[in-house]
Image (cartoon, rainbow, N blue to C red; front, side, top):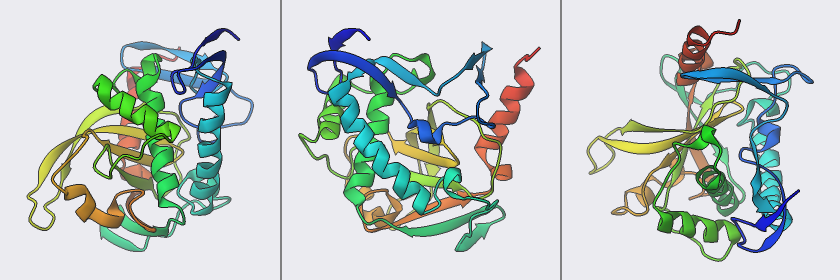
Length: 262
């Protein structure tokens, strides 16, 4: 491995492989087989490991990320928020159905600050890496620096700084990887706030969708959402959608139809 400056700690050292999304959440359909990665206008390529950057962090930086990943893997699997925690289940119980295919779940969060920090670490990795799969995750340099310091534990950002909401795919679907993308979503009217379009970064892994709102502050709207925002309270309220009704399914079918696998 090469020697360089860690983008997280800013200290020089030996670079190590750093997974942008934890490897435990980015696995092939069948063990031992390579990943097939395709996309709009790109020739499909095969990879034998999930996304990792060999020039992002040194051993010390990776230790910080690994500790967060280890906690998150245990937590998300224990609450059956990711497919790899389902065992033989093909569907997760949904507490309330809103419309066909869509529902709501409530789960406990023993350490909301840790969940928040793990999610911010994913955002930092995606914004700091040079990997083309995460090109759409960009932010002002001062925001990236604030994010770095938060992940490092030097500062603690408020709830309005890139808050995250979660959506779970409630039925088992096709195992696949999907790079983070920039989108906009419509937020329904809430309290005194009218419905509005919000720019987000959309992450997907292992049957879980994370929406990071692209903002550094607001007028108190995020705080009012309470348990609907990850890491604010000891309870998390998340939306659910069946795989067959999800954006993941529609996008996957589009990629498979568009890409020539011959």
